[in-house]
Image 1 (cartoon, helix red, strand yellow):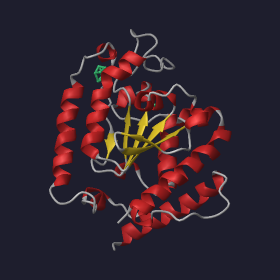
Image 2: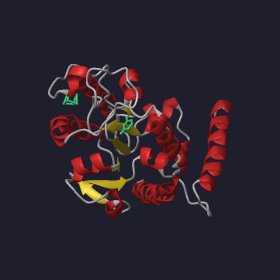
Image 3: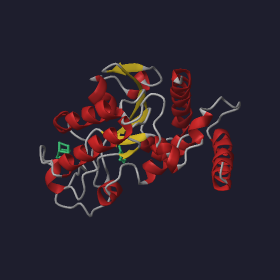
Image 4: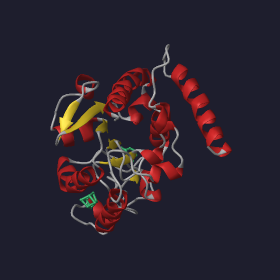
Length: 253
Ligand code: SF4
Ligand code: URA
């Protein structure tokens, strides 16, 4: 292994241990260690689940889907967005995160979860022993739901997507799930849980219990923005992510 790779692993492990303590963990849980060793090279490599040839085709399919979404105007959100925000990460990821919808930062950058809540999600992913590049991150709607639709340059102009917007855009999320075939989906917050599970129950009631969506395991948990408002919720998210990690660990062949 190259020296740079060793250094990457060491620095990630150190940060991960620090984060365990930050997140109220008192004992070290078994982590999916081979996922930590994820350089750009190994991210591109097919896992045992997806055999040779399938990597390129998933990548290609996502690329084609991106083109369609980039020009989509199926709902009114398409008229005011700066960028459609399709998703980021590995097209063969075992773990997929689904948030609500792009906000100001995401609309400007064209990438999901890059603002404050996104930075927290990135930390959660790293504490789990992954990096953004080897999971897949997306949203229920791909365009920024704004309160004042005339002003994409205004901050704090975000709102949750409507049921109609979520239903209209769901086709793309379904396609992403179909192409990527994750082993488990983590829904972040009420909107994505509502969209995929059609559940009206509050997140506090449904989180922490593995459900299913189209035959794929699904874990509902709190949105990272909720953790920013109430850090006491971190403990619950960490508990939920430990279940997800355990599931992925036992699923490995
Ligand atoms: Fe199309 Fe989805 Fe954007 Fe609506 S939110 S315009 S359905 S990509
Ligand atoms: N919140 C979300 O739900 N998605 C993003 O991409 C950013 C913030």
